[in-house]
Length: 256
Length: 289
View 1 (tube, helix red, strand yellow):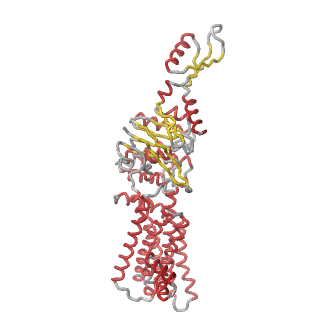
View 2 (cartoon, chains in turn orange, purple):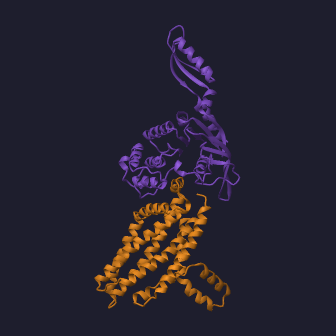
View 3 (spheres, chains in turn cyan, orange):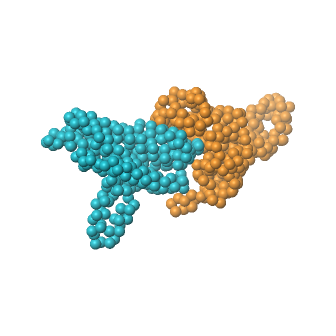
């Protein structure tokens, strides 16, 4: 796998994604939603800035997920379903270079979107009389780490199933990933052995996405130790590498 | 040797059925040939071209498959240009950007002037900054040809190159293939059109149900073909007035007949090689199977 080729592929696919109407619409809608917190503030007495933070961070997370699901999956499934890959693979491009390049491109699109929303929330916070920067940067960083994992799953699912099913499965991983910790606690107390083992199996297989959710701590300025960032970074990169390697193996043996 | 294929097989699984796309196809292509691959839909033409380009792997039981004396996954792909059937590209990218990307990825070191030159050659110079998604089918086909030739490859493989093109586009492809041939390059193309084969190729292969029905040079076909000679009687009394058609069955007989026509003072209107008819019979045989 050559880095220059991955960079070229990532560059052109990132351009393709960021010019897409879906990306532009999602970015526009997200910025509008963040601004909607101003209306919400009228209804919340005394906690205006909290409402902006709360809504802003939710939009940040959901927007990133939608980029991964709608753009990432449709890009790869569109390429595989059409003849774009014939154009690429008749040139000196390896399958691994295409897949890693695409992953980098989708991540770049997510990064651009996250940047736009983060700046919007930051400007709103200034407008509301509080310069909120550190918490916002932490939230953006954790969102990017989470989306790295989601992106790896989205690519893997796209390669083994249809685009619609891949979207459904990716969304399922997101929901399970955010609820599995509580489910594991419930399962531990449960007397139903079947339910207990199913949940424990899911707990072992699915990523624990709650690691990346520090919204409450961020909003209420609770100190997050530096070691926590190191841990989540290693967790995200390890999980992503594992899933991407699996996706590369699947793609290598896939008939196109 | 540019292409050497022995006993190439390929099967696909579709809806729990096994489809034998290629059943032991063997052939060779030497440098500076134009091989036309003819066959009905589902004959295996596209599968064969995809194996040659290294896009898909040949079947496990296939024999030797060498492109530029190397296995399909190992040869330098800079030496190859490929136009897929119904080409699709990144839709939000402009024509210029797509060719720029193609140049970068092939790493052949051409300057950016080459992009303008190729866009002019395929008749898309006015659309260089237009996004590919706004292109019609014919324009996408031209774009496909442009990306296939941008790095001036030694081997050009075109899957249905005339598809979706207007008469000017067809003329452009014909001129391009002839120009490439003059430059000593090798061209493979698949088509349904018998006239394209007759007008352009040095060699022809008829494929059907994954098997080769015919593989010959056009020179061989001409030597064994039926020629139709259309003449008009000139001297009254000696020959009847009006058009006459003679049929001869090989090249030697053809020259003798032409000499006779010249001697008798008849006016030669046209000579039809009959290759089209021969190919048509193979094509129909293939379709009927």
